[in-house]
Image (tube, rainbow, N blue to C red; front, side, top):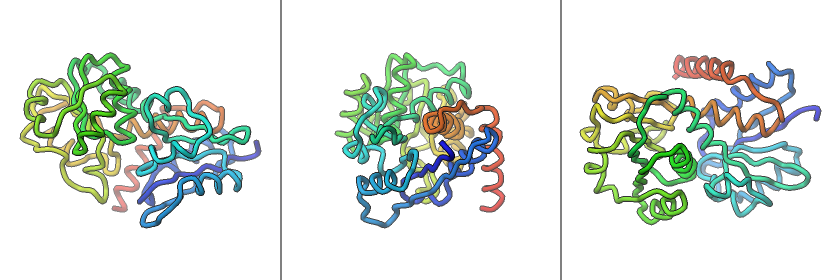
Length: 279
């Protein structure tokens, strides 16, 4: 293949670092690689039409972010085993006339947690959010061997459905005080705290030093939740590691080449610092 045309479909993605992150790694590997943003904010877009158009235009693949990770499922020809189990897709590969859905979010979170909080206990973990990214994170936590994962979402039926599929438990938000009092870790997979959706996803008074706290939001890297967690004495993990590792796995699927994680991590740090200096 002479070059790779890749896209990202999502709402409000103009500040995404994915184009620069992917293209920089491709340059190091001597690949021609073009990463385009397809921002659907404020539009009544048809996900199936976007996929068909991308295929006709010669795209090698697409990344999918909020709000399309679950909506895209019905428009695909095939799912990888992991994506089928999770019930969400963040990477679509066009191959042999077929649109094949993959999920690299779970891999991204697993690697981020393994490297960023290597000694974090996982006997009891509470997860906020049961959307597309939340599904991938829930499966990754269960597969890592957590005996107890409790999923909490304002949409209690959505939390219950995900918990059933992942082999976890679900609980209403009203139970958070009791759950967090004895939990080892807390993971935020909701969009609360990201650019455009500021704030905290829970009462910071519930945080305590015996709790580690992870947030998958990466714009900004220091969310209000992580700031409050550090002030409460918690070990913390930001969303940067998940971004890098999920991007690296998607890059491998698109190109068949193995990216260098350390180099992508350094480049992500540079991009984040640069974005912060222009904020």
